Length: 158
Image 1 (cartoon, rainbow, N blue to C red):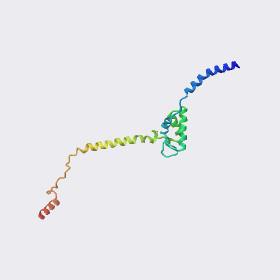
Image 2: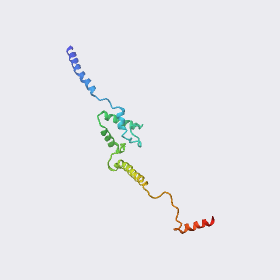
Image 3: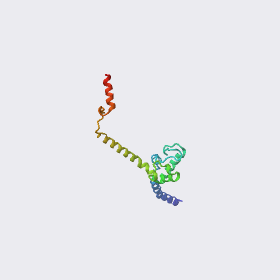
Image 4: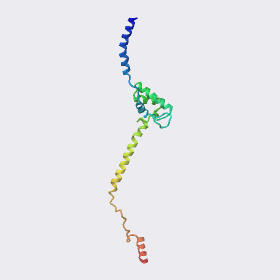
């Protein structure tokens, strides 16, 4: 009996550092900030245009728990997004991928801004180069018979 107790204590002395080391190696569980950083980039598949990190439904709470589990398993952000896209389609992504017609979302706003800036630049630049006078000139009485007749009528009445 003494011998088995000694063997047990020796085994415990050997196993204790191994158990402590394995417990120390385990990473801490993902924080709420890490989960919400990914959940903010996904939309709730049930609610309309509501980010997953602020959606109050029970389904979204389960999806946030899924994100936490995937992070704890060592999945990357891209892998988690791909997982949700496989499950629910690309509509769950807050930022659509730049392929197909989606690339227009990234190209049209800057192009419209640059075109508008160019039009304004041309308008301001050509606005100061107008050489015509801004004050209208008096009509020429000799060239227009109606003006000459009007002036003669006004002279008679005065």
